[in-house]
Structure formats: structure tokens, C-alpha cells
Amino acid sequence: MYLRDWFIDLTPVGQALLAGLFTWSVTCLGAASVFLLRDINRRLLDSMLGFSGGVMLAASYWSLLGPAIEISQQGTLPVWLPPTIGCLIGGASL
Image (tube, rainbow, N blue to C red; front, side, top):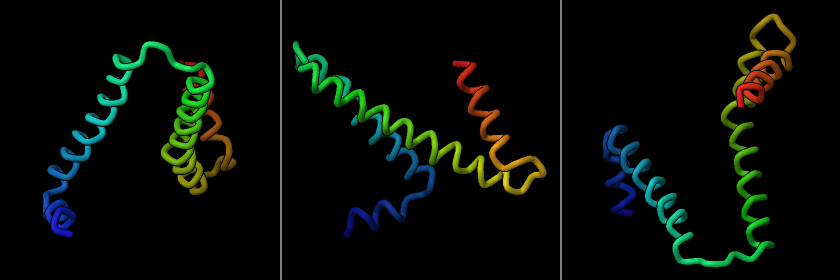
């Protein structure tokens, strides 16, 4: 409980800094695992790629499409039109 209380007492900038450093370190650790493994099983690689694709799909909905649908409910256009246009423009720019 003491560590949690210490973290809560930090300023928002300090919390964001620590959270960013944590996510950076676990990403770096995961990326560094490539130096330890010479051969990766094809089924494991397919599973990892599928999992990462699912995570990115969920992140795109919860962070982008969901809020866009909520915001478009306040407009005069059909609710589905602004998020669809944004999704198509984003796909075309990729």
C-alpha cells in the first residue's frame, strides 16, 4: 500500500513520466528478447502476430472509433458517416 500511496501523491507529470518509463522499459525488454532466441517456432510466431493484431484492433476501436461515434452523435450527419470517413482516410494514408 505504501508504494501505491507514494505514486498517487506524485504530480500528474511525475505519474506520466513513470508510466512512460515503465512502458518504454517493458517494450525494450520484449524487443531485446530477439537477441536471446535464434529460432522461433512458426506456430508461436503466428500466435504472437495474431495477438498483437487483436490488441491493435481493440486499441483502434476503444481509442479512436468509439469516441468518434460518441462525438458524431451530436452532429447533423448520420452517426456512422464521420467515423467511416476518418477510417477510410486513415487507411488510404497508410
